[in-house]
Length: 271
Image (cartoon, rainbow, N blue to C red; front, side, top):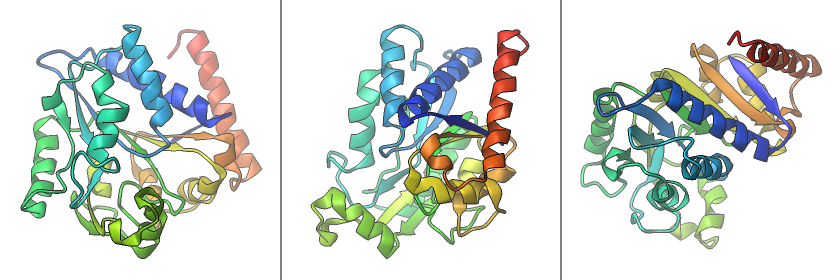
């Protein structure tokens, strides 16, 4: 696992966008070789999406031969609802780049058979050759996508009933009216994300510092689902300084020293 500690949340967005751009370009995607990217919603990745849009406009990256799979979607919310994840992704990212709509995969929370929809999503990931890079964010309780505390760490894409704490936290997006908040969601499983070749988790803000501590300094625990990625062969966690407030000083110094050595190797052309 690598922990990249940057000064601000804006730096996290910039660094992440550069990394995604490099991964796509190094892969050299084409009509017979698509780069498969897993994507999150929420406020944390917005900076990354804005930077990627700028890189596309500058000709630094193309998404023509990229396939995407999003992490989750509410059940029963119309696609054009401003709080649906379909709306979020098209409004904040997809409509600004050259991705083919057929290559965008977002779970359909209005499908007649939700279980079949989840199974189809897993099959589509398999048929695409698996996810090269799955990007995610976490909540203050360490959940990733809608894999809330207590979720199986080998779970697959499925229907999830949301916890009361989640409903109350999400009420602010629905005029603080609890009756409008969707009670269920479709979500990729922890196991689904673990199957990807690389995982990049974005963590910003002091309110997520305890979750980062649980993910880095303590053991794997299904009550903190992000901790599962300790066991992934290629996990990157990108955070700002505020998110490190619960980490021990020597932990922060250790990961910063690794960053310094890595930077020196890059300057010497050795990586």
